[in-house]
Image 1 (cartoon, rainbow, N blue to C red):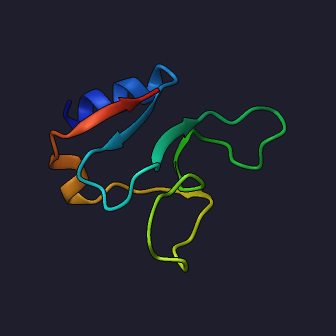
Image 2: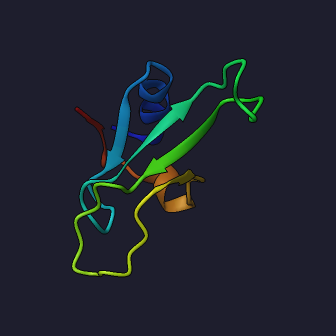
Length: 81
């Protein structure tokens, strides 16, 4: 699927990832802030806690994410179950 379809999937509460990303086990999600959140607008974050890599120094965590031009133009997005 393309980036627009990936965004629609995020809005429906699904997790998405690109097949072309370096590293498996990572995905993005959409967070909608609630009354207890410090953020006031929805935002996308990436989850790398399940990253599979040979790089022992690769960061594993959850951080805000911004799409690159390559991500926005890619057609290799898929839903992560």
